[in-house]
Length: 428
Ligand SMILES: [Zn+2]
Ligand SMILES: [Zn+2]
Image 1 (tube, rainbow, N blue to C red):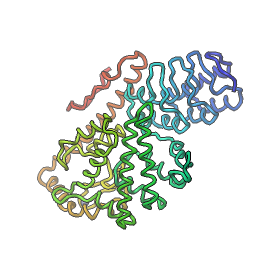
Image 2: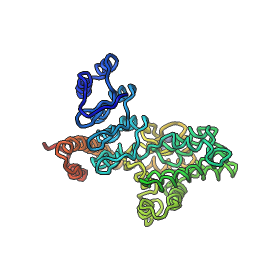
Image 3: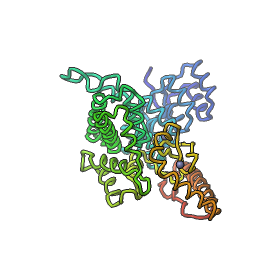
Image 4: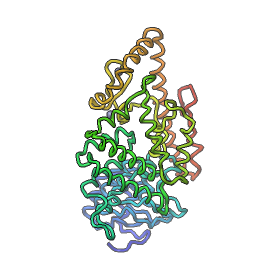
């Protein structure tokens, strides 16, 4: 491919930029098929077709351009923006993932030294920040599958790389979920294999702390996963061959209120054992639960989860009571108070839930008999939550436009209206 100069475009290259801004994927495909278009040509601002498509938030167009060999790390833009930065600014998580999968570098900075994640955070696109911060290139793991230096054998047997990468990429950090991910893969249900995985995770944690642009979030995630794997190892040594006892320990609720205190203590312990005690994130996490009595909010999990994924736990959300997966749509048919993502998860939970199920049924009956309006109120409340959420989303979109137009600070445009008891209204 020949060198491209800013603004030095042929007619068909100008045409494709117009087609991209119009969002006509079909015509773009035809143009690319029938014309000699340099896929990384630059407009007068140094933007490639891929950057335009990413900024526009057009995932089909991005896919097409990548298929035609668009360079995801091109950075001839006048302010040093990359396609990943434009994807983050667009707020589209699918495009952000697509850029990362195509090899976008996360540590490239623009002309004022900001990374794509920092730029996305600046305009309030926190889902994109989560995607970027949790991305982990398979290549970084594959490195450990080759013997380095004087090693006779690699630190990580190649057959373990795929299953371990899947665990690293999970955004559901519920320890039960991680144990289930281990359990679903027979090559991992082995103390020796898990021990090696855990050691590699520790090395990755160290890399994240010591790299130039220190990533405490990813380091904490690596450390936490390593701790869960280590816990699996110790249970496998105790002849818990299918990790059933570990899952039960994590789920078992205490007698008084069903709160899973082993799980809480385990997560607190993992966090405290983070080996780099000067890390700000560690201090933040520990101080946020230090004074909290076990069983009260916030739980160590909610604190950890928010720090690592940027996602706030929603009170009314549909989390599976066993594995924490979102979108759980199966209710305990007796108490109707607990949700599960699958029958497997319900079965796993029953041994401990059965002790609480009766009293939850009574509570439910009390609600219906004595105060029929209370339940109604709960539903209305959740409607309000939904409305507020979509209102906020709309605000974000508008803020983004305004920010793009005016270059102002987005924070003031994102003030949360959730304390208002009235239906949120749009002022224009
Ligand atoms: Zn589940
Ligand atoms: Zn129940």
